[in-house]
Image (cartoon, rainbow, N blue to C red; front, side, top):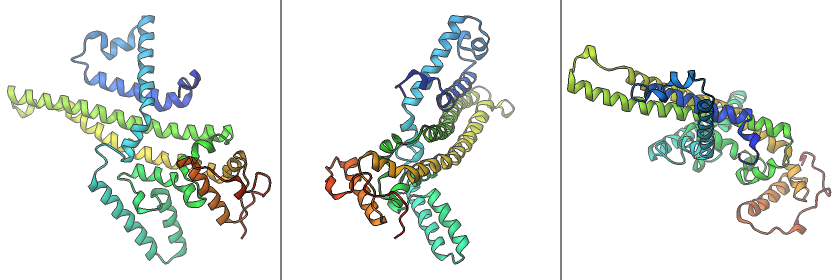
Length: 315
């Protein structure tokens, strides 16, 4: 993110971090408008013609967007169910039961076309094993394509990805980064909507306490902040579903990268791939030891690059 300044002004950064930050900030300022000083009112901020003030606002907005990008991985992991309120034993058990139910349904399906479609949906939405299931749909969709390479070819997808990314053409890396930016846009908007809901709910609770002490007349019940909180919670759910929908496209590109460029990675490492599936899987399992555990590899056990073809396995 900080390798070049251009990364902080490109389209993906603006879409993934600047826009959610802007939308979330405006919503919070509107909610707190009646208690903020006049200089921080949205109308005052958006109608100013003071160049110094505008510059300061842009710098603050960009700084908040950069801060959001720094915490991007923990935010993803929150929605995936690695930590936080979404990681509960009850949610995990429910997802594991759903995993078992889907697998059992596939086993009972007799029609070939129906079964193939059910398998396709299963592989897009679930990791390959029950012990890999996460407590959230978002997490399981991401874990499904994270484990694709290991299931199909043998390499550990997460450990291999940084190496594979180095041999991908610019056109594919750009497409992958753009797809992830779209996911991040909805992930960060989901976070912002939940923050707005929390602020609105807090203010609504304060309004209710004040109403109960002063009048308790139903026709004077303060509803605005509670309505905003309810709408924000609905928006949070809708944005979460949108993030899942975008994650499928991101995952498709990641899986395509493994399909097309694993041989190029092997060649870049100085090795060729065997002609059989068993040989290739054995090679990638050996490389997993290198990537994950820093184990040494015996180069004499594997053909050098150019000693074998990279054609499809026909055995």
